[in-house]
Amino acid sequence: MAKSVILALVVAIPLAVCLSAPTEEPNIVLSIRVAEQDSPVQVVGLKMPERPSHDPLVHFRNASTKQTVRIWIEAIIAGRDGKVARIQSNSPNELWPEERAIPGGDDGWAHETVLQSARLVTSGKDLHSNCFRVTVLVLRVEFADGSFWSRDQGQKGVSWAYPSQPNTEDPCKNSNANESDVAQITGAAFRASTDSDAGSSKEEVQSYQFSCHLVRRGERLVAMCPF
Image (cartoon, rainbow, N blue to C red; front, side):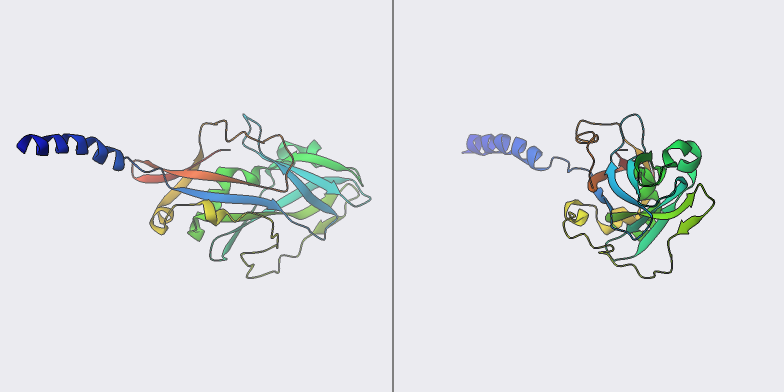
């Protein structure tokens, strides 16, 4: 009888080790999308970055008859509860001015620093959300003849569904970080690339989704993002 009990314990121990294997790191999920906009220049498509760049590409369509010289993008970051953060930058106009010079009636591709994954997480971390829906809109356009167009920013209380795109996958379905994890995020960084990160980076899309893993670095909790 004693031998049977000992044998049972020996068999049970490996099973217990397997069941207590460490769980995967918590993650937050972001969905990036374009939206229809009543403006002379529109963003009609996106491409994920191609290594070693961290900057996604945006597909501009100049519906006006005038050549553009500078274009500003705004990223509207919406959290789970509907609160939003807005970010924009002049850096692409300074770094790649030729990409922003688009003849009237023509299209062009341009790098966009505002859409860097780590930057989006850092800008949205005060929303305390484990998922973000990011909408890409044109904020301002300057033309070669000295004229300009600027979007009215008088919109308040932008909702979770703004702008409406019912076919976009909900990023909150794939995130598993809890409220405590999100509250501890102190920053974001780029993780080493993997095959899954580069899956369809060369294809033009209207939306794409990615996740950032939350990793402990000493006393800091950092979101490690793909690009």
